[in-house]
Image (cartoon, rainbow, N blue to C red):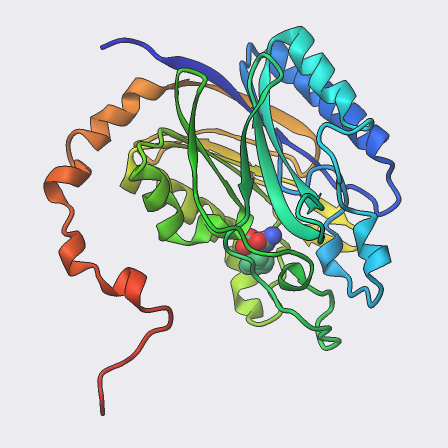
Length: 312
Ligand code: ING
């Protein structure tokens, strides 16, 4: 058994204020990079929408007010210091941001995550597939969740060969859908990097609030175990512009065990030794997909969107 260990850091971030300059946020990310480096990390995972406050919590009638939160180039002048420092340290990283893509002549906006290798190259880009929340202003809510208004959904889950293994990315709500992990794992994914911004209060059903932490770890751990992959879930958390967001960032082994967990609701780094060869303990036994899966029985999973119960 070879050892394909990668030392991975979960770089959790505390609140980002609405008017916090990107340069200040990048300084925080570089400080986290240094703390990860001190722990020997080769790959640092940052949260979803790591450069700005979680702006989908507000309704903006004017798109000009929304677009200030988007990046039109990556790296940009504001983020280049992060790329430069990571390159100097030889560390790879991933982070989420709001992407404005004007390359087609019309603007397309995505909730995006990128993967950068130790040589500073952007080796992967992912557009969030599962957009939660709602499309129109819903004043009954204490705060909005307008990702479905501000972003277009992505159209694929992809993997990339990097850091000695096969790496995939997902974003926040994606982690709640088992299809996310399974589609990645059907491409051989050994490591899934997942940033999140999760308000603890869920207006449609507040009874879920008390279970926010349980549900977060439940889905990350089951995704890891059922697909024999390492899963890194990293929060932007704490009370951000009056909204309390879940922390509890974790690194989860293919066994489903949590091997490292943040214990604050702020900027914090935890590091774990992630031997990608441990994936085989599950992928080649209990979850040997090619031997045990029955896709001919699973047709409804891709044919049908909503549930259709039997006739009464
Ligand atoms: N956030 C949330 C998530 O799926 C949400 C949406 C909020 C779900 C509160 C449940 C409760 O973690 C994002 N950004 O997807």
